[in-house]
Length: 228
Image: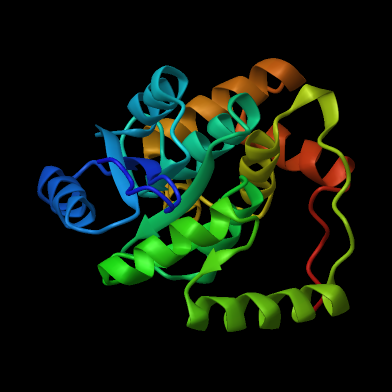
């Protein structure tokens, strides 16, 4: 796809979605629109990261719920290793938890899968020009959520003992009494991914079981007793 003389070159895009029908549908849709060139498609987060390394696209349209490596973790790896590639999350779920997890990981745009082709192209162009490519309703919710956060929270402490941000997040949820399945649902990852994070954080902290993990989280100030 070559841009006519005088026009900006098309944005080079990788599409990442574990559902073949959805992925191929998005690729087909974008192929019909001006201003976008689909250069690759990935079935999971690991493949998305690999394609970014090989193809250096301008933007990745990233599904959040994928096997092996979810969209949030893939976004984090791409933004860390390939800062020239922007990420626009494209997902069925427009809930606040997934929104903030994706934005914290470095996503600059967030669209639901019912977005039209023109809306997707606008989001791609927005993030490439340094703006946030967020659906209008999501922008409002983001501002509301940030206003609430200013009132009720302070900046969290740095994760102790070399824990990653995600391992620290899992540890906090263990301290709050959540099961692996509940943590997986809350973070929109697989139970196997949760177990991997738990094994890693146990190895780093020397913890042997969940009871020790709960005490550790309270001792480090990561979890505070609930007020009655």
